[in-house]
Image (tube, rainbow, N blue to C red; front, side):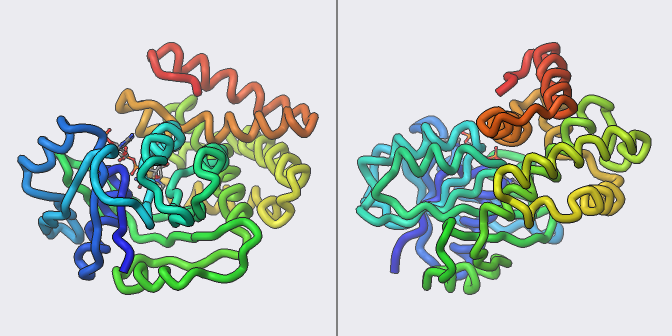
Length: 304
Ligand code: NAP
């Protein structure tokens, strides 16, 4: 049975690692460096808080440069850390190693795959929600679903059984790029505006024309990028998400409010880089990116 190496014992990485370990599957965490490893050992393991109940999982951990060869890896860092984190592990990857990429947005997956040509990269798109409320403590905040897939590959690999055993809600997608593009488009239509208007998702009901204009350009981009399915009824779904999550702050709003780097380069930034490559001029989205970058710069946050 292959060991699940999990790089990044953050919110989603911790959530996956704890559930896999709880099901009796072999798991090892890969932490940044000796200092993080020392902090982890001091707290005695990873704590998962689920339905208000905390459970401690003493999962073995190591740094990137030590340990046994890696045959299966869950890369659970942010999109902007993914390429560098994956590159560090190259000497440890067994030929044909399976790597699940949990990053939101697009762009980081291709960068990782280019660094690891001998690995099998599986893209994932998740609607699960988790956050950290302490050192190596993860709160399971929102039930959701994870789509996994390899572009062009219709058949699911046998190791997905591990996810079923661990109770991780998931399904194989024969068109994972469509899922990732759709999620990216929803994010581009909602998250930057919630930052600029400093509001909850529901606050965007006050800006219907702005939302509609962005959806129009996003649908144009998706179709030009060959993602017709992801473009279908985009505006209606954006409005549904705004209503369904009206009381929530978007992840980008939360990042900015907490002074954390956003994943903008892999969301709106990626959308506009793709538009440029396709020779498309999308003035509303371009103006949105410009305003967002000015806003982030004003708060001392990275704009990529
Ligand atoms: P997170 O809580 O910030 O966790 C990221 C983890 O990666 C941190 O523990 C960080 O370590 C670690 N890391 C970064 N570089 C590393 C390296 N070189 N070596 C070892 N560890 C490294 O992030 P997250 O919320 O789980 O998000 C991960 C991805 O999932 C993002 O793309 C996000 O958009 C996506 N996602 C998240 C959620 C959610 O609810 N959280 C939902 C859907 C999608 P340090 O602690 O040392 O910094």
